[in-house]
Length: 184
Image (cartoon, rainbow, N blue to C red; front, top):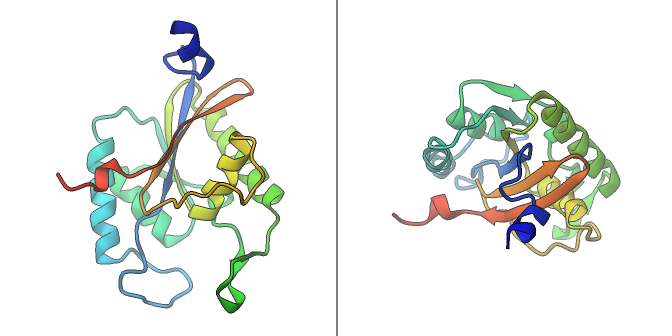
């Protein structure tokens, strides 16, 4: 089984782990503002996420410039690097249907650029990147070699998706994990 684990970049020296985290809840109170803060539920979720991650060695935390991502990241670390490339995909919801106003290729490229910059700064380390649902799913489609928009997962608030990277190889380790939100 050793070679199978290596094929998926498990336990391989020099692998960088990218932990893509969706921001915590902002909708619990249904406040309609352009850049909402975390709701009380969101603050609880961010704290539970921080509790889960505190036992891990995390070398860097990056966040989208949106307040909900920055507040979620601040629960994890007091040293957060803001990266606008981690922002949510521009979208609208006419008649209740999601319409992206940014191409999937553009979202993938900017997410890839943000991740590549973090990889260059912290090779072989664990990096947390707090971002947004559509951006995460679109990037994961690229990693999994799926057509963007076909990954039928819901990235719940503070869910964690892990991508392991070595050289030009990228492997999904977990998708939309919310074990930290389960009752104790």
